[in-house]
Length: 370
Image 1 (cartoon, rainbow, N blue to C red):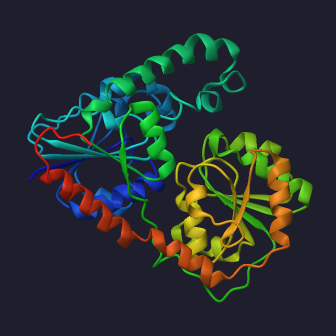
Image 2 (cartoon, one colour):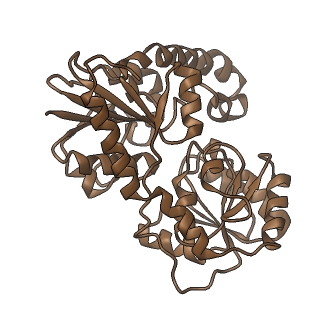
């Protein structure tokens, strides 16, 4: 059986790439097709595969400004050569769920999220305060409207959607009019474990520094509380956030897995101020025995138990987060219980569930859609 794996872009090891890494283990001989790939940016387990990139890889400033080529993504994705494949597995948060698979092939899409910027998070990326009122209305809005139309119209190219949470399954139903099987993403609970170190008084954020993560909310809440904050990660919003940050905020930049595990273990708690489709980071923190303070929306409702593994806050504001930080200080948490909750999302559980979904899809008659 010839298998092709498709991923939007390979420019770093985030949640989507960790899912792809597990799928690579299931199909070690599969080729990978992606819009962009920078050698060394993802794990050896992924880069052992033969990786095919799109023509966009060679466009000017593609390495640093690849998102500017968003209007060309549909055309580029449809050029992937998947001839001869019996099974196509797409790992999609943007455009690759719309690849054109051979007629005989089954297409399973692990959907991290329907295209955020085209559907419900346009303002976070291309609103007037981001790109200017004129560009937002007259340039980006028409482009993203066309992308949303294309995204919905090509949903039939997927035989089976797999969602990373109930939250994303609901968005797939809303935007694509399709049902999805839920398979939670993999968390390396063997690597992320508690250690015999005392937690310190600071809070921690681990995140790509992009608008929808709402990190500015945590900056303001920690400033008001007089709390120290450490931020691990990088992204296009870093300069803006650093200008907003006070002296008690430390930007750590990208960290190795070992460094990140140490940060989880030493933090008083992890803060997740934005809405996540699932959120692997809070589960990694819980696997290390640390509680999480998270916005009560999206995937956090499926991973954080109020008063048991963390604290949830209702509104995406500094005031609401500040109240949650104050409640956290009045609570005590059992690190063993927090750790046990995280084990529900282990790599072993994910691998078993994905294998079952794929086998079930392959055993169905050709053309079956779920």
